[in-house]
Image 1 (tube, rainbow, N blue to C red):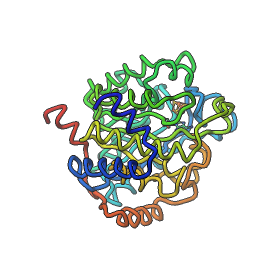
Image 2 (image 1 turned 90 degrees about the vertical axis):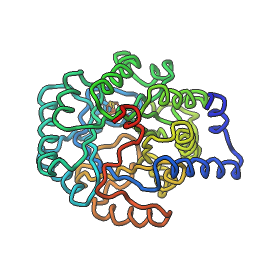
Image 3 (image 1 turned 135 degrees about the vertical axis):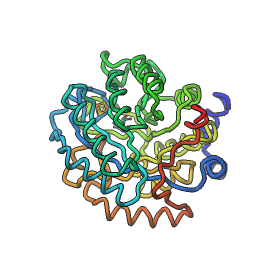
Length: 347
Ligand code: 5AD
Ligand code: SF4
């Protein structure tokens, strides 16, 4: 798959051609990873963040956010809820912090979740850039997957999205360390960032391929009104970003084939059935939020994040129905690891 091929896919506008693209990606998904959807219960542990990404609603300098960190007990209970409901794994996500207290708290949560699930619950972390020792500590405790989005592989665009202290090189270095530590590594980008071109997005997909990535989580960029990026005008229309997000899923499936691809909440923000559309375009993972409802509105990366008032149980029932409606089944009680990881490591 060449850069030009991918750019052409991302540029498709004819509805018949577009349907063909999604169908082809769906066939590729069935062939390489099957028609099961794997669920990862998402625990939004804390919205306290030391970083200052210009697009993000919980960035350090935002004063309009009520900051929270849930108790260790609450995080463990949410994880065990996912386990009891036969989800293969959980994702612990939070704003980025590197202090010892934070690191130890996460270690204790991983330990307790592993113990209380008799080693059954898969644990994925999404906690940003950390020192090698921290990644090693969490891995040794029982986390086995890590998500760290590269956000964009266009270095100039990366600079426009982040303060100088946050470098693209450091981010890629962190991804390398994660791989060396032994994690299944996930990355992804935001789609429709101001100034981002189709070539940029095609290069992102080639980066996933070259980096031999195991899992992908990407979604449309959505404005948060209290961020420096909210001042930028002439953005893509949200409905165009939704379609571009779906095209990215399809093009990534066709290029990488055997990886896990998440259908993300940002898609659902732009259309109520956005995540189901993502599954039809080639994604095979959904991350239902299992965070206690009282915290949800504060984990506001962007405007209009859905399901802030929905509890995990209601969400599970309606998700099950909608997944059935599109002819897929849920991979309950399975880790649903990316086949690519086993190929990469000859496991
Ligand atoms: N729109 C879409 N995605 C966002 N993220 C942060 N802010 C936004 C936004 N405004 C994504 C980033 C980050 C992930 C946790 O959320 O890609 O890695
Ligand atoms: Fe912090 Fe992540 Fe938001 Fe950046 S995107 S400000 S690291 S929570």
